[in-house]
Length: 248
Ligand SMILES: NC(=O)c1ccc[n+]([C@@H]2O[C@H](COP(=O)([O-])OP(=O)(O)OC[C@H]3O[C@@H](n4cnc5c(N)ncnc54)[C@H](OP(=O)(O)O)[C@@H]3O)[C@@H](O)[C@H]2O)c1
Image (cartoon, rainbow, N blue to C red; front, top):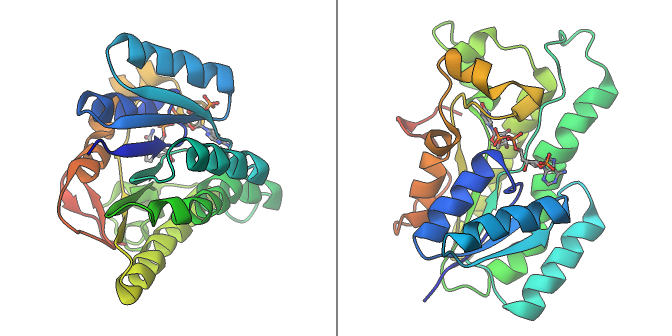
């Protein structure tokens, strides 16, 4: 049966690449975008390439937008097989933890943690209508507590405490939700993915400059998420990238 897959923040960057790859594999894609016009344009690009793609307006920081998206998927399909929480952003601008203002940290948490949790909780009833569902949370190595303390890791030198804390919190949500489903016999897996350093417009960055410094292409950054979305195993409660398991 065709799998129905919702990807948040899929009008550009890695979300778009994930939508494209899973669409090419025959999944029916619900392309989430906070801006309906951008979402429709991205969906049309993929439909022109022969894929089954519907745009869906979804601002992960707006509860009403989420409940409207849930109502639409409920009315149109009555279930969801895969939820990919990809939308994310960083607002820290390399400011030190001692001076980074609370409003900025709250902004980091609104999208990367509270938004992810709200979208997930609202879509769980639809995921429960699937015989075997998946939740994939695109977090980041930047949220790894152990790598932040490892002088060999690039995360050791990072300074984005709001973004890093929000991604670490999202990883904890992955673990706790996966355990709840395991313990209660709910057939939904929950995993976190680290894409690596990827040349997108993420954080207001310049993709060309990032590429010249060795960042991956968006398609390469999307690879582990795509693998997990196509994986038939019941892997759950993991944090991984294309090299294998990432320490929490
Ligand atoms: N790039 C990296 O090096 C890197 C590394 C590790 C992890 N990640 C993670 O990978 C994920 C994808 O990042 P990316 O590099 O592809 O970023 P990107 O190119 O900046 O794309 C981010 C996407 O999220 C959307 N978005 C922003 N705010 C939103 C909201 N409130 N509701 C719904 N969608 C929203 C954006 O939509 P608009 O077009 O409307 O802004 C865009 O579609 C993020 O979770 C990020 O934290 C990225």
